[in-house]
Length: 328
Image (cartoon, rainbow, N blue to C red; front, side):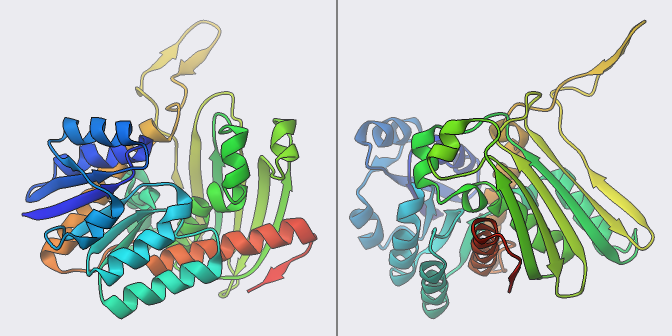
């Protein structure tokens, strides 16, 4: 039995707790959160105890921690968990500061512990199927990637002010998809951004719409377009063009029913937000983490992946603010 502590009892913490409870040979032993009521509510739901972060790291019976707390705590919790010899699953990003994220990676490697970063999109069945077929050579050599990533609405402005900006908060997932799908790293990044959906976002110092072009070290091209407002729902698509064809990953809908009428053909809108769109991916990534611990195999999304995605987010932010191409 693997005893696990959950750090963070908010929205994503509750998702992870539910998925933890379904893992064979895994027990949610403790829940920690600065919000005592949230921690107690979630602990009671899963027959766990409430514990402080200090108690979690000092408890030798706890073999792993799942970090779903606020971004500003991630780096500290990763370093402390590594020093305590505990396996780590941490939500993105590792940190908002690239140098600090690299320090976390060094601490993990020094301790020799497993550390997985929560890039759940790699575990989405549709996206994973595209990757498998691409790797099998179905469309030959990949040459170009186009990613569309659109939220149905922006988070509160108070959150945006502390988020690190749209490139670190929202596009970090798309930067990870880029690296994963093409199996390549960026040589240069050129980013544009605007505030088009809510002037309050601009007043907070951020943008809500972006267009990013990446040239890889192998000369491939990737284009990522994002917005904080898509009136029709959560829009998550990409296509990869290869020497022998193209593979597309489309949106998920609540049903696949198509209605044919005298004047219009209609289908369901895309699922509304990430909680619905990636519910299977969240479950599968947690299952993968604990399977890796049991079988002593590598995890699919490492802390190095987290650092690499953050480096791209940093480069895109610089490109936008300084109006230039950034070479990596």
